[in-house]
Length: 367
Image (cartoon, rainbow, N blue to C red; front, side, top):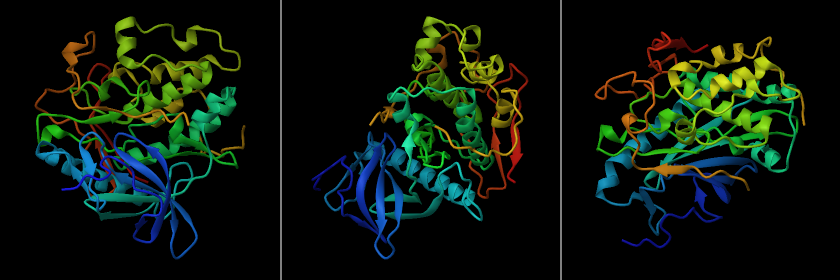
């Protein structure tokens, strides 16, 4: 069995159905994103390939296969989750798309893997703006985070979490419209098939529950990442990753300092999002947006003014008792904490992050 270019992206010129690949847009632990152009119609798309690099390799005929027999079940489970979430994201794009989350056009399976075809969003990544030393104020950040959060809440309603929100995945188009891209980083419980759990996330944007398997993930997980993005925009620096924050202390909250151009409420909302213990964070996007003290209505997104943070791959997560102090696990080890992906996008169920604040299972219906 030839491994001519194992663990490499497909070369430019490769044809996938009606699309010809032009270049690689990004590579993460979970997949590869390509820029594609239509063969019959001259239009651009972004195509995400399911390719978990730590457990997969590519054969000479482009087929994606597990690296060994031990990885087969994990690879298959991840592919199943990728397809499920792609279908749900497609439902978000029909009959009308949300302008602030990337729209999924189609999904197909070939070469032993799956490909999600999305609108090609041409814009400047927030990471690039930060790298150039861009300065923000409360209004400009609100014009980015509010519409992004609204789009994310729509995804949460059907059971889809992003799980890898970071500045490279937020694009600002020429008209000032922010777009959250690179969905499809589906989290899969290898424990359903094996004793090993594989997760993909990017420090410092990853929350504690992305390291500690006894804590459930939910909307509060994406909220943590959004808080870190805002922190970076306000301060111009990335905070320590969450494990370092736990061991070194929480540090000084933003609201305790002086940051010209930002109200105390705005800074307090960022601090709340970055709370280490998941049960102490806002449990939904709507709860979090209310903390900013603004008139939270439909976004208008007024115009405003290659640090592609690598997504790390972890094949063994920490147990909660190895990094104390942490609040007690909300659920017993034997109870599943995986987000339940619904067969139909009429509602989604997330288990609460924990009982400490009286949080309960949240059920929200899609609108």
